[in-house]
Structure formats: structure tokens, C-alpha cells
Image 1 (tube, helix red, strand yellow):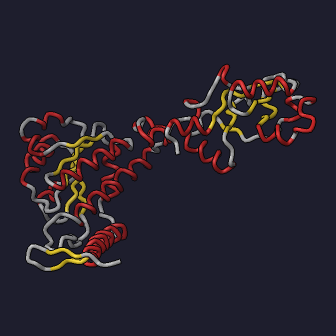
Image 2 (image 1 turned 180 degrees about the vertical axis):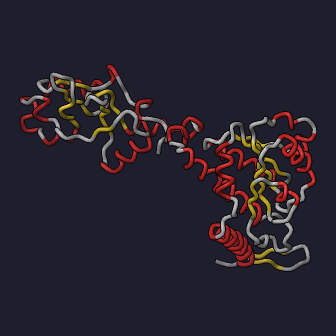
Image 3 (image 1 turned 90 degrees about the horizontal axis):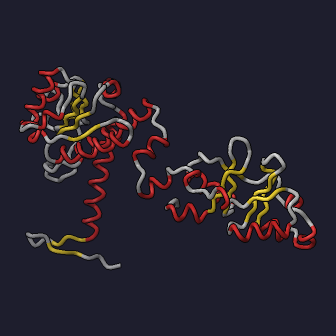
Length: 332
């Protein structure tokens, strides 16, 4: 394939290869910084995690410019993983939003230089009311790091910008450090998938975190027969309910087997002379109502089947789940 090129403002021709080289250089520079930070985590990291975990109020995240954009993302990630947090713009804080900060809160302040003037009023407010400060900065002796209760020093790594001016490596490292704080807190809290689902009810993620009990067919929609039901009646039950299966129960209502379309084909020779108990698979694949929808989808795909009977704690059928129910809900 021919290499394309275009002219830079000074007339220099820039090829596709040069564009790709620039992209690789940026990604390499930033990935090396992350590897450096992983190998040498800030000394105060564990202390910062424990301080945030102990906060009775909320985590207030603040930063200006690119640090502010990253701060908003960090606050959102903390909130969605069990640590109540919100972002405050330092300038707005100086004009009344300091009133949003309570006595039990903790402030996370972000400034690569550590000398962001707009953070001054917020730092003073925290000192006045004894609020802990977690600082994320690239300069150990900066004003922000000196004021911090817990200082998190970013790795000494060059910005990916060829002029060393645009925040690139530093913002990537800051965002990754914020993710590390959030996940460490998540594990410290024992944050479960169920609680995660409470905070993410919408979209594909919400669908995957839904429980089988919220998607399964129940009551009269559940195809169910007793073990002594003639196969003629069993076929009517399977057809009328539209799931292609029938849960077969004993006199006590407990599941003794499942009749599927495959079982019908395997017993075609004398099918109408048999009962549901004769034809049923006595060891079917079943699931529990509290299983995650995504886990149920994995079972269906692994077993190459399309429907599952859902059993309650007493081994009695409580529902039936078809792969189409999962697909309609967005679980895929």
C-alpha cells in the first residue's frame, strides 16, 4: 500500500510512517512511566488508602486544567466503586463552594507542579478545619506536597509531548494512580459485584450485573409436569409455554428431571407410550435465581444449550431462563 503524506505548515512532508512513529513514541513513553510507578509506588500510598477508607464523610477531589479533568474521572470512579466522592473546581470553591465540604470530609488535590495558585484557598480551608489532604503531584518539595497529610509523588518521567509542555505522561500517571486508589479501596471494603450493580443499573453493564431472578419466567409461564404425565400432555405443555423444555417434578414438587427437544428426538420410536419421567434427563444443568445474568449466559454458551431451569433452595423449580431473555436484556 502506498504511503500517504501531507505537508506541515513549514512545507515539510509528513508520511504515514512518521505519524505512526509519533503514536508509538507517545504510548511507549507513557507505558514506561506507568511501569516505573508500578515498580515504585508512592511511599504514602497505603496510608492514603487507609485515610480515605476511614473518612466518615466524602472524598472531595480538586484540580485545575487537565488535572481537573482527570480529577473528575477519579471522583466518578471512586463513587462507582463504593467511595462517595465528588469534584469541586478550586475557583468555584473560593467563591462559595467551600460550603459543600463537611467536617468529616477528605480532600484529594491534584497538581503536577504542586504550585497551582487556585488550590491555595482550598488548602487553607483544610488546614483551618483539620481536614486531611491527599496530594498527587510531580514535585516532592512543592507547596501542595508540604501541606499534604498524605503525599503521592508521581514518577519523574518526561511528558510525551515533544516540547515537554502538554500534560500527557503526567495526566496518564495521575489517572492510573486514581484507579489504583479506587480499586485498592474497593478491595479493602470487600465491595461486591452486587453492590457494583446497584451503582450501574443502566446499559450493558447493568444487564450483565442483573440477577437471573429478574429475567426468568415464573408462575404459569414455567413449563412443569409430574413424572407420571403422559408424553402427549407433556408435549402440549412444552409447546404452549414456548420454551422447548418441561421441568419434571416428583410428588413433593422437587425436580427429578428435564425433558428437552433433544430428549424427544432420542425417544421418537415409542415416545407416545411413555411418561415424562421415562424420557426426562435425570441430571440436567440448572442454575440458581441469585446467579448473575452474565454467569448464566456463560453456562448456556459452555453447554451449547438455549434454556435453563432455575431451582430454589429446596430443589423445586421456580423459573425458566431462555437465552433470548438474556439477549433481550442486553447480556451478550
